[in-house]
Structure formats: C-alpha cells, structure tokens
Image 1 (cartoon, one colour):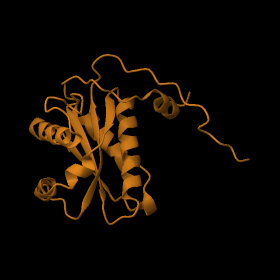
Image 2: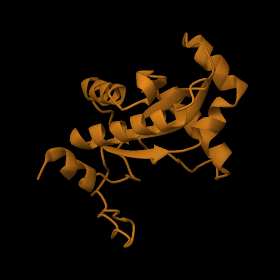
Image 3: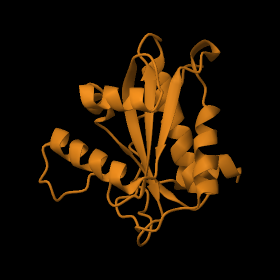
Image 4: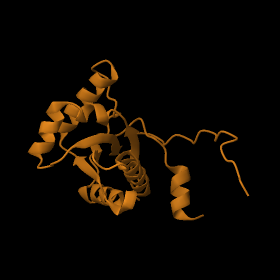
Length: 175
C-alpha cells in the first residue's frame, strides 16, 4: 500500500505520552512538513511555534486546563513534552482552513517518524488573552494572529489505539 495512504489510515490521536523529549531533528522535520501544507492562494499565512521549554509547556497546559474548565491537576496534553502551536494570520480569509491543513501535516509527519500526536483545542482562547499577545511580541512575532490548534507530540506510552469503525453513509457519489 502507498506509504502516505497507509499513514493516514494508521495515525491515531494519542492520549498517553512518555515524558522523554523527542530528538530536535525529528521535531524540525515535523515542523517542516507543516510548511508544505496546502494554503489559500499560496499566501502561507500560518505560523508554527515549537515549544520544547518545559516551563512554557507547563504554563500552556495550566492555561488550557483553566479554559477547558478542568481540575488543575488534569493535563489536557496527556503528558506530551512538545507542543506545536499553530496560528493563522487574522487578516487572511482562509487562515483557519490553512492552519487546519498544517495541523494535519504535523500529525501525519509525527506518525511517520514513530511519534504520537493529538490535536488539542483552545489555542484561539489562549491567543485572545493579552498575556499571550505580549508573549508573541516578546518572540518578535508581529501582526494579529488567531490560535488554530496545538499539535501535542511525543513518544507513545503504551500501544496506539485501534481505529474506530468508519461510519457508513459518509460518501455520496455523483457520477
């Protein structure tokens, strides 16, 4: 079977990660794959912030947990040591779609390198917080950005889950 199609069928959202940090080279390959996602009119109006700093990772986890309304001891990133935060430039009309395609590429790339991944929401709410806007400025990122999602990555702790059965009647042919 074609390796891309095989990866699409085998990739799963992982909800338990090892604390071991993936090699930087692997993270760089994953982030690079995001750069090649399809995007509206070739504008490339999406930005990925690779967070491997444990202190910043833990802050994002805490803030994300608060936004989600969970107990402060819950980790909505399931222990993943790396967070790839995907942002879309607010003034670009397809930024949400473009960022979603980046997220797909990141997750498939992680899977292809033997790492697990999961899309975690609430990046939009984080970026709506002035504290995160200030953080972007401190990173030298200018302009207005909307959070699209977080791609949490790391080594899987245990076995990858099996695929759920595909629901019927999700394809309509017009021939």
